[in-house]
Image (cartoon, rainbow, N blue to C red; front, side, top):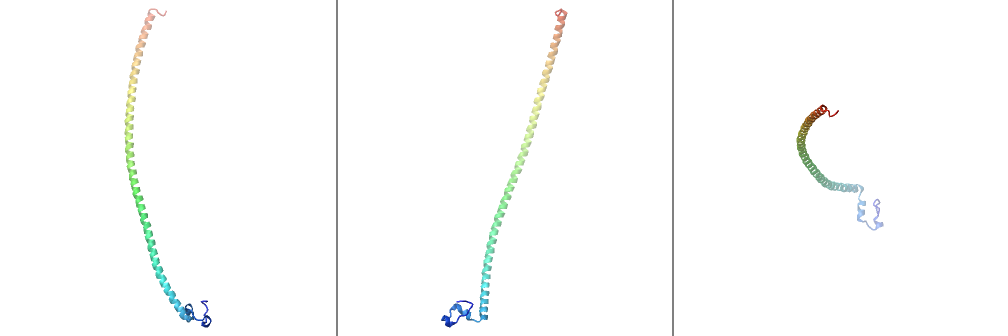
Length: 156
């Protein structure tokens, strides 16, 4: 049966419940429809409002969870950074100590090396002096020998 047309009770053999509203005067139907729509709208608004509120609360809880996890991650990273920074400072101090020890060891080694070189030079000078004196003595002996040979006529 079409909703838009009114039926004749003699044709259908009686009215059905769904057709009764069609027989009401149009202003009553409109008023009933408006009341019903208003009620549905209010119910829907209340329902939507509570659904929206619960949805907003769920979103807020979700975002709060995300925020807390983010904050924990940032705090953890900051703690890690602080630990790394402390470790780097400790390493820097240790490197400075090591560098100072190496410098002191190098100075000591250089000093020992200079001392060893000085000793070697002194010994070399002493040997050179000894060799020169020995050479002078030998030359003097050779001169005396040549002079004696010339004197005794050995070359001539």
